[in-house]
Image (cartoon, rainbow, N blue to C red; front, top):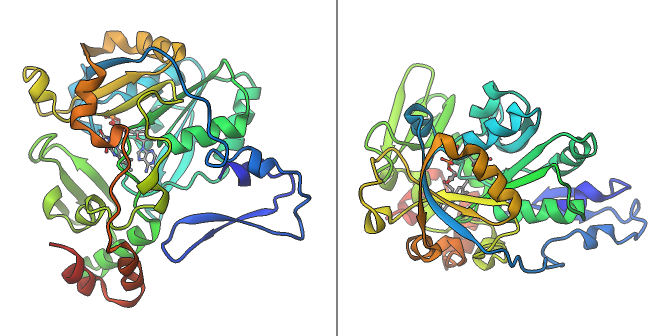
Length: 350
Ligand SMILES: Cc1cc2nc3c(=O)[nH]c(=O)nc-3n(C[C@H](O)[C@H](O)[C@H](O)COP(=O)(O)OP(=O)(O)OC[C@H]3O[C@@H](n4cnc5c(N)ncnc54)[C@H](O)[C@@H]3O)c2cc1C
């Protein structure tokens, strides 16, 4: 969506295709052929390699309550707090009132919880790149967080380095379709008579971090489903409904363009079993001088251990490899329009 954000004539409409992912469409009547849309496209114009001497850590937020509320080791909340305490704004992914996942910004510590927790749906960037630029030009500190492609999209849109900009990405499995998520919410409404008020994809309360559950809160009840038994998580982890580009992702790489990369430290038990208390451990990769500064400023609030980059790579294939294509993907999206959700489950879930 860098193209839509940069277009001086608002000539780019974003339209959903049959898989529910958004793609740009140029309105030829408004287009003046300035070429800016192509110039800022992170797919058409690959960014030069980051040659920074990467540093890697296993980390845990010392505040156990905040770590339990986070998906991994609770690092995002600390980065966001640091920026907001210094008068800045933080961009990230939240649920809106319809439980759609959208990018937005926050300016207060109370609002950080809106962005906390992984939402396994592609978030809508909308016009947040433009909004971030406005804050940067007002000399505010900005922390922009998201998937690696969203960060490179922002950097291409901005076209130059801003000293007051910090970026944080995640190790990303791939993003599921917003249409699948909508249909799943409709299915939950049918089954329960209402849509949930909120969903936590990575609940640790029931059985800890490794055995995470999906937590659904309804008006009068709460449900916890072990992730391997959860319908939506099955579809996500089967790679059947990811964005097409996720199967050939050019943004998953060892040294990212973001300042700092955060992830789950899967496999920590093979490296140092004493660290894992089942409340969440993060893998943190420092990709730039600015990333070092961010890390320096949250160091007092975390327990951290130096690790090798290969320790992260070994147990987290999505770090620098695309997710494998599921051959049933095309059929799945056809059936998503033509079968009931129960029929879909029968056909596609083991
Ligand atoms: C779609 C997706 C796939 C992921 N795949 C992997 C993986 O394969 N391996 C791995 O180790 N980690 C993966 N993660 C990252 C991991 O789940 C945690 O988000 C990360 O470790 C941060 O944890 P935390 O405890 O520090 O903070 P949390 O509070 O848990 O994370 C909040 C951060 O996640 C961002 N975020 C949440 N949902 C989205 C979204 N839909 N799009 C963009 N940003 C979002 C927020 O903006 C914020 O920056 C994935 C996350 C998402 C959203």
